[in-house]
Length: 141
Image 1 (cartoon, rainbow, N blue to C red):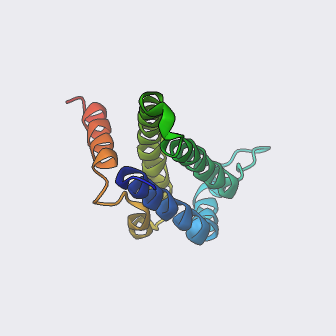
Image 2 (cartoon, rainbow, N blue to C red):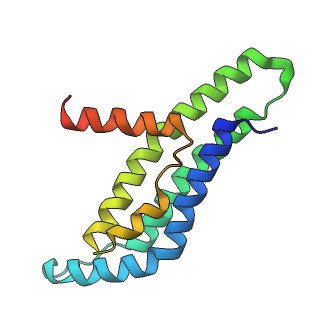
């Protein structure tokens, strides 16, 4: 049976993936309009839609590892707890970074309001704490 922290992370990851799938084409088109005039001769824009997809895959891989760790056999409870804790920590490191990167892409493309669709769940104190710690570090606090 999944634990509440795993359910919260799953919900947050699904919201992020849903936003990528829903808004990727629109955000990519607007980013291309913004960035294309800045290209020098011979330069090409990277595949921005694929970049967003890869960011989503990082979240998927972290969530898959967290799910596997959370559902391991109860016979190895202590080692399963450690594995689950490490998997959740890895998810908590990547998810805020990817969320911030996508928020930046969305805001740059003029779609900042869409970024609210993949914010972590308010019920997920682990992700909220990870985001808060990351903001303090970036601000030098």
